[in-house]
Structure formats: C-alpha cells, structure tokens
Image (cartoon, rainbow, N blue to C red; front, side, top):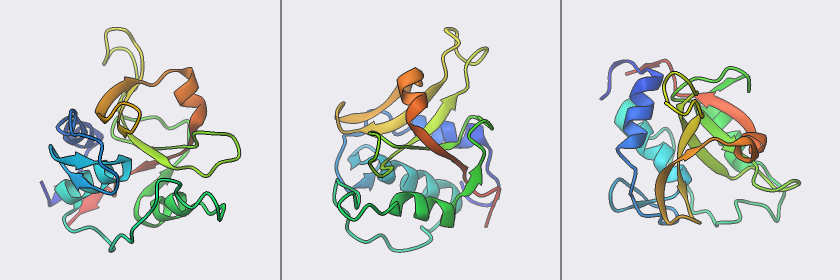
Length: 158
C-alpha cells in the first residue's frame, strides 16, 4: 500500500503479516527470512515504496566495537522521533539489550494494552534471533526498560 496516510494500525497489521518468518541475518523477505531491521525495511517497502538508501552489510554486533549508535542514527534520519511516553500502535521501538551496549534491536508496537488486548499487556512484533522467527511478544517490564527510543513511520508517503 503506497500513497495516502499510513496509520499505526496499518503498520501493526503489516508487521503481523511477517509473524512466523524465519530469522535470517541481513534478510528482508516476508515468509523467507528477516532480522529485526529487515522487518522494518519490509514494512517500509510496503507502505513507503522504495527504501530510502542502500543498506551496507552489517554484522550482528551492530558496531559495538566502535561504540557507534549507527542504528539509532539511521532511525533518526528516516523515521519520525517521538517521546518515549507517546506510546502508539505502529511505533518503531529501539532497544538497548545490555547496559553500556549500543542499541541494536527493533520492534513494532502492536498493542498498547487494554482494551486492545484482553490481558491488558502491551505487545510488540520483532524478529528475534533467540526465537528463530518473527514473533509477537508481551512488552513486559524487562523489555520496556530496554526501550531507548521510539519512532513513527512518516505520516505521508508518495
């Protein structure tokens, strides 16, 4: 879907379509394989047309040896930064998995809690290497504490 206004519900629905896609480092093909960035790239292509820039190869350590926040810098360049407290369905979440490490995991907020989800628990969709596939997970306290930035896809796409 390109053209017109992209809503958070559109983004969450697109992310749900990727659930079950195997985890494959650097891939971005729904059903065949993706990593957490590949999930975001695939949703971008579905809603914003062509990817905004070529993606160089990257390692799983995400520039940790250089202590560079490359993923965060790229998100600031192409997505719309939001306050952490401005939680909405469809937001792109950036996680720092360990204290002192670079932020290197992404997900899509799929529910903010009640009444969207019977249990009232916020949820997110992500390609998680530990699980081996794209999954929808509860956004529990430990996950919430790892969120370092929140973004939205551009409001208008051409």
